[in-house]
Every structure is written in C-alpha cells, then in structure tokens.
Length: 407
Image 1 (tube, rainbow, N blue to C red):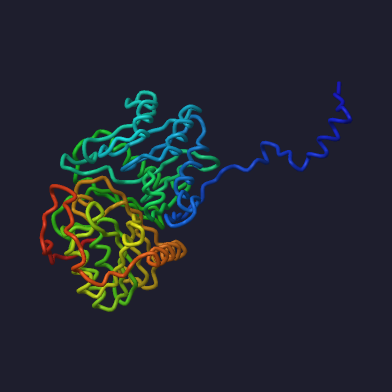
Image 2: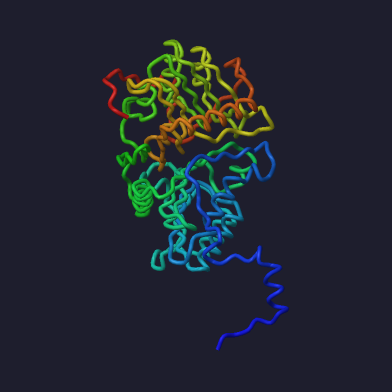
C-alpha cells in the first residue's frame, strides 16, 4: 500500500527542499594536484594551511585505507588527533618519525598505534636515519594516502613537519600529486625500504612519471659529481635564472656556492635566500656566505625579521637546462645543503618541470625575499656549529673536474 505523507510534513519538506541533498549529490572531497605554501607572517589560517591540508586528507580516509607519514619532528596536536580518529574508524596509520626528539604527541601516537606491524598501524623510528649507522636523520616529509575522499594514490611531498615550527616560525611548501600510481608506489617502496633500519648508504635512485622525476637519498660518493644538486646546477646554461632557498648549508658542500658564483659570472641571474642568526639559529657556514658575496650573488637572510626562517629547500630554474631553452623547472626537496643530508640521511626530492608551478614557486620566493634582509657583509656572522660528526671544517671543498654524469 502506498504510504501517505502528512500534509504538515509535506509542507516542511517543500520548505526545506533547497537544503536536502541526497548522498549521491553530496560533494566528495577531492585533493588537488599542485603547490601549497604557508605564511608564518600571515593570519592563523595562512600559517596553518599546510597542516589543514594534511588533516583534511586524513579526515577523508575511509576504513581499510592506509595513511603513511614520514617526518623529522612531530608536535602538532591537531594532526595527531586526526590520525587517531582515522585509526578509530578503521584506517591503517603508519608513521616513521625521526628519533632526535620525544614529544607528547609522539608518545600519544606510539601508545595508541603501537610499534608492531601486525595490525597494519604503528609508529616506528630508526636509530639514526633508516639507512645509516652514522649520526643522521629521517628527514623526508611525506604524507601518503592510498585513498582519501574521491582520490586514490595521493602523495604530498613537503618541507613541513607536523610541528608548530613549520606553521608559525618558518616558510614551507607542499606539492601534491593525485592518482599518480608510479610516484605513489615509489614513495610507498621508499617507506617500506626504511622500515628494516638497515644500513644502505648506496640507496640513491630515481623514478620517472612524466612530467615528474623523483629522487631518493642517501647517495654514496665522495666528490661533487656524485652530488645530485651540483649536477643539476651544472646542466644550466647561461643566460638563465636560478633561485635557491635552503635552511642549512655547510662547507662540505661549498662547491655548490662556487657553482652558483660561476653561473653568475657566466651571465645567469642567481639569487639565494637562507636563514642565519646567532647561537642555535646559526645554520649557514661563513665560507658559504663569503663565496656567495665574493661571487656577487644576491643573498637574502630571513632571520633578522622576527627570527622567522625559510625552511623551503628549493631550486628554481628558468632558461636553458640540459641544452633545451625556455624551461621552467622546480626542484622541491627535503635535503639541506650538508654532507649528512646527501650521504647518510633519508631525503627525497621532486622535479616539477611545469611552468605554472614554477610561477607559483617564483611568487613564493619573491614573497619570502620581501620579508628578508639583503646580506651585505661576510664578517657580521658567528661561527656555525657542526651538524654531524662527519662534517669537516674547511675553507675549500673537495675538487673534482671529472666529466659530469647525468643527474
């Protein structure tokens, strides 16, 4: 028998009809491919945009799907809360977090997720990096989702840790790819390769998924021709534009500063932004600053502006690269310009040769520069501390004039 609707109920439905949405019509969350940047000088929403991006993806992971996070530090409670909620609703949550510090959030997640792998959720760490027995770090920042909302195989390559320092104290970036199985699988393989905590400093390899190329470290070697970033710079022909942001730069990779100086002399436009300050904030060796200034490379420091620091590790190239003119390329990496980052730590880098993405990163570079102070003297600097026992203090980096391999 056909049921009748009470007239009053029918009237209410008619009045509210504009607000009734069927499940099929409900908007499904869909992460977007592309770059996102926070602004530590901005509103709280502008500061937290990268964390909210992660939380939104976590909140939309359904039961049975897998979240993987690789990070250096973790103290951002809203991300911890979202991960615990995801586990409660049936998602698997797998974290690899560096052991250099212990926070309340790490203890909370370890207590809830455990450290064993039997149920598919855990928080694990390694003694140093997961591929070295020397002092080193899990330093990649990867947020991976097998499914979230209407998307599968989502990778977020970031410079931002789930930590307050990556929100209100520093400039960071995240690049998201959606539905790229090759990159996603490569990132998952990297995650799984780290789990055994077994030394393999000859781990370096690359994976291509046009237009992208991803690089995984540590990389074995002892000369600049086994330094991926040096080879990238060596493949630039002048006149071109090169912009570099980094957080930590030691004399063991002085040859990168020397290469930038040589490119400036050859007619390229070159600019560098770094953070440097006294005491614990001293992150750039004086040899680096001296070389950049002697090479007339415009160099900018973010530290004098309320102690904020650039945490992006980015190389931007606009011009002729590997003999092909008119290119706009972004290299977004987790790697500092230290020997440790190259030879021992777990790091990842993504090559993005997309003009619109380059333009977005260029705009971010200019915004950070507007909040920085031009470096004009190499003497107004304190002495930097070593960032690992393997760093050697030297005014000259290793020289090697052998042919340049591909990057």
